[in-house]
Length: 246
Image (cartoon, rainbow, N blue to C red; front, top):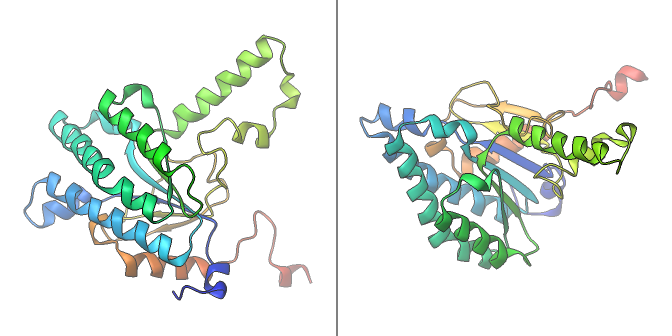
């Protein structure tokens, strides 16, 4: 996809990716699951660099879900080590690429050093004006929605607002993606066809693409092909095609 104004006009405002298939990628090669996660980090780097190159405005990557804590402790610890390595090695590159990084998810369960790295990375890139890159880390959409509902319930209980004043827009502002447009395009790798508790409220009218490619094999070419696929879709948001009305 060429980096010009015509190509940028066809880009979604916000792409969200469920990065799936690291373990199966490794198993097919007779490798431990940890090797798949290491390879997956390289795909993260390539996709982020591609997003910057083509002028994508917003990208959200599903890095670790609230349910991922149920995985074997050795795998969870390896994932945390990879997050530490990414924050140490890549945040300055993000800064230099004019990327603004943010983390969405429940920070209460993060180790203190990881929390410090998150805060440092967000601070270091806060003034950047290019790609808005969000990592969903210890993120679960159901938990996010319940937390927002509790805020409204408490405000109503205290008499600060009326139930009728709650709108889709005001609810969206209480979600962790506040300030980013809802994802136009959600991609899931590995062939699975579910969204696994990811951006449930925000993806009400997203276009979805489920592809067989495992995440470690998803690079620049696969990302650009997915975006070409999106450009060919007609988005109607519950309406009908113009020619059907005429």
